[in-house]
Each structure stands twice: as structure tokens, then as C-alpha cells.
Image 1 (tube, helix red, strand yellow):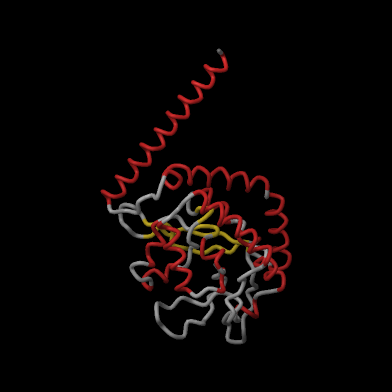
Image 2: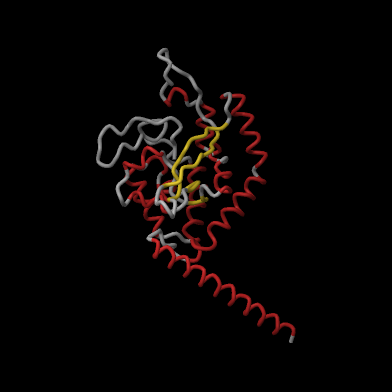
Amino acid sequence: MKKSAGVILSAVIGASAGAGVYFITKKKKNEAKTAGRHVPFGPYEAVFKRPLDILISGTALVLLSPVLGATALLVRAKLGSPVLFVQERPGRKNPVTGQERIFKIYKFRTMTDACGEDGELLPDEQRLTRFGKLLRSTSLDELPELFNILKGDMSLAGPRPLLPEYLPRYSEAQRHRHDVRPGLTGLAQVSGRNALSWEEKFEDDVRYVRHITFAGDLKILFQTVAAVVKKDGISSGTSATMETFTGNDTENSHKSFSEDRL
């Protein structure tokens, strides 16, 4: 009898939770449609994705704190101060203004501040040390972005945050990559990281935005680990970092931007 009551109670709780998720998802979809905003694909995106980001990033920061601390000390010893590379990046669009929110992204520094005789910074290839290459190839330089995820600037999976000056260079379709929070990793990164062209990256980004699922995010995270282990697509093939995006169907897009790595 007690067992039957427990089964019934579990069924009632499960049905109530399922109904709650359904109505919350439906409400968010209707609100987004009415406001002309990005419409969540399903319950995972509408209800569960953000809480999971908070839970996983918070747990990871605690568990990886020794790694973060050791990496910070090594960066300070080998590359000097500051330990962190901080840069403004555009995030998800503001639902009221429709403009991308600008936030500060945190990474471990991977380059020196070496300058030439003219006082200008040397090319990335000359400032990227062996230690910096190691940080990049293992993606240890990306670990501070867990703080960005915890704050709500970013998500575990999503289009990578690029540079503010790229915003006016996007096509209307490409700008939809900012309908959602940028990610620590994304579909473009597991498809080839820096070895892909900008157009290929943006196509993957928009494809992701239109179909966000738990299974898709889980696949991206597992494939990211595999790509890091194999060290696939670290460089673009023409420079130590990814070439600057100068716009669609333009030439001379092979100039690198300091520290701008996806």
C-alpha cells in the first residue's frame, strides 16, 4: 500500500513539474514572439539552460581552483603582470533596446608586451611564447571565463564572443548569433575551431541559435574536450591567431588581432 502511494505521489509530482515547465516555456515563447525577440526552441533553452550554467560553472570554479591558482602563478612568473587578459566583448542583445550588451571577458594572458623599435607591439607570432602556446592548446587560458558564465555574461555553449568593432560588419542573418548568450565553446569550435573561415563559423553559430537542445549542448561539450585533447584547429593556418573579420566577401582579411582567439 505504501509503495502504491509512493508511486502515485511521484507521478503527481512529475506531472505537476512537467506541466509547470510546459506553461513556463509556452509563456516565454509567447512573450518573445510578441516582443519580436528570439524565441526559445524548447524547455531546455527556456527553463533549464541558465540554471545548469550556474550550477556547472560554480562547481567547476570550486573544483578547478587549484588549477586556476597554479596557472595564475605561472603566468605571473613567465609573462609578468597583469595575469588576466581583459577585453570588452558584445554579448546577448538587450531585449528592450535590441542592442548587444557589452561585457568584459576574462582570460589568462598568453602573450608578452614586447614592442619593436617604433614602440608598437610586435606581431602576435613574436609575442606568443612557448608557454602561451601551451595555455592555448590546452584551453587553460579560457578557464577564467567560468566567472563570466556565473555572472550571466556567457553560457557554457553558444557562439563565441568576438569584438565590438565586428558588429557593423555582420550581415542581418549573422547578427542573429547575438540572440543568445555567447559561449565558452560552441558549434563552430567543435567543427574546426580557428581552422574554419569566418563565414563557416557564422553559419554554425546561427544554426546553433535556431536549435538549442540539451543533447546538442552535451554533444558540443564532449566534442570540445576531444578537440582540446587532439589540439585540433588551434591556429587558422595563416597566423598564430584568428584573422580579423573585415566583413563579408572582402579581401585582405589576414591581419591578426592581438589575443583575439575563438
